[in-house]
Amino acid sequence: MSKRPSLTGLKDIAASRGAEKTQESGKVVSAPSQQKNAKTPSRAGKTHVGGYFSGEVRAQLKILAAEQDKTGQQLLGEALNLLFATYGKAEIAETERD
Image (cartoon, rainbow, N blue to C red):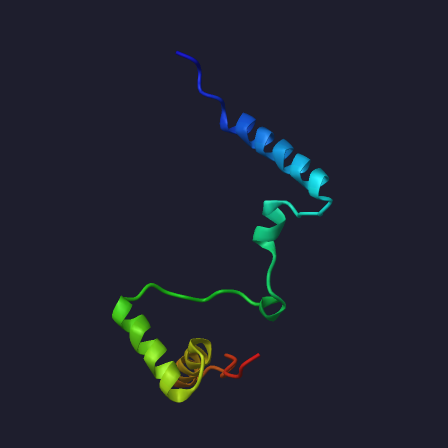
């Protein structure tokens, strides 16, 4: 029975095959790790804030967003601002579309 190749070896093989394809096509392709870390310009300087809720909560938020012609992000910003106001904090969450 032959020994299974290590994952490191497979990674090297995949990288060399990708380089061969790039040379053949003449296209420049960035490495997967660079693509994974790329952020859209609208997210630059921002961070994700979230929580885990039931599917019903998500569905109701989407319905409310459609009814109000707003995004879920806008509604969450409004909700956070209401929470901040309740506790005497500045209402700093963005509620406008980018």
